[in-house]
Image (tube, rainbow, N blue to C red; front, side, top):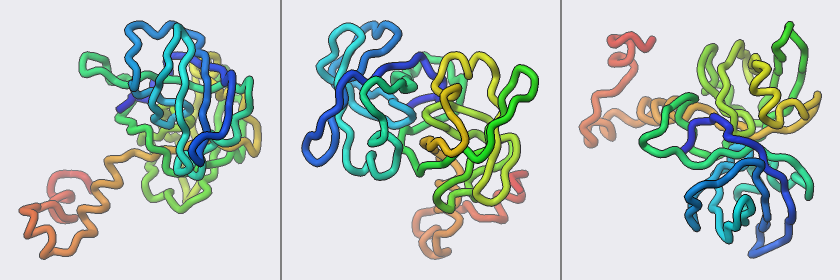
Length: 218
């Protein structure tokens, strides 16, 4: 589990095929105190398992599923990536709940300056727009962001200078692909609402559209 608050960036030192997927060797630009073999680490928003940790360097395996749903397969040696170590229960939840399980790829459809800020507009490659709401949270390449506006499969976000300086967003241009994870809470609510009445009754759940409306969710 992650928060979408990027700790720093890393660089891809080596990539090779392995077991039908890929094996990456990565070097972070920040220290990894108390490293634990097999710990989870988010690379551009994808939860991966770190091993062979030596100082700031470590290896990860990238499965065929991760390659098919994300941009990891497109990263070349020398490429810069966003990194976040797994959330600890004692940490501040500065972003939002991020699982590290990417839903799809989006592309930059517009990038413009607004004073010191940068406005990005993204277009999703899959029909996941129903999970994106104005002022809701979304994860772009592992970064927790707030949605400015959304319509259909397009949405925009406003990037503060700090985020531009400390992540890979500054390298994006029109057409660039990014990894997207929508807010997982919306997907759980949708599944519960779509369950058949007898199925909900069997599970003892009283969650339906009437319940949500009564408690101010609609």
